[in-house]
Length: 329
Ligand SMILES: [Zn+2]
Image (cartoon, rainbow, N blue to C red):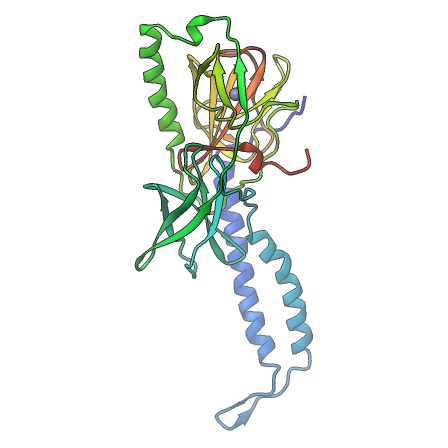
């Protein structure tokens, strides 16, 4: 078991502020250096010739070299783009400048991030979306619509037999409970935390094979049901479940279908959900480091065996978690 120290909730904002100050300090030094080095060029101002600074060009090269790693840390890791139903579209926005533009897709606010001085909308496309021309609306000085194509993707069918009939055809009391829980779940997925830097490259939350991919068209006891909105990872009951990236626990609960569940907010509408857990080891408000244990794999809720159901959501739209994982598995 990996033992990762819990990131103290009070320390995290301090780290962020320190990082931001350090960056500002560097940029200020960089600007001063640029001015100093430029004085090295023979310039004539008001009839006076400024003496050449013999170290100017070397100093300038040195600062360029030190700038490269700093600008690299300024870029973020985006999910892999796959403009299909259930995928993620990464669309470059025509906005420039430091001010983050706001963007909407199907009346839902979408993630906007800066990567190497360009702004990108990171859009979750619903499984129910029709292939064709879609558009993201950008709000700047004027409203602008940017069109992007969504291609077709065929997902496989899956037929499952559930022995507990109530899990396929819930009774009236169950339905009441399901409706109440649905609201809680949608509220969690709708959560918006406005942060600049987002870690959108994940580690696998559980060690184990992917037993059921995202998007499968499902049939329970021959009855068609909603497509699979997450990724299933098979692992024995009690296996540790880890946070795939830095985030904040926004909700935990025990639900009819999902069993023991944890929601993690990674910022700007990027929410992950962990279901059927045996044990939950975190509480609402906990700040998590990447790899921190949040609980254990179980078989609570509607399951046929112990596994983790993992959902990734952008703009309250469940998308393929594999797009957030490294390609080599
Ligand atoms: Zn699942």
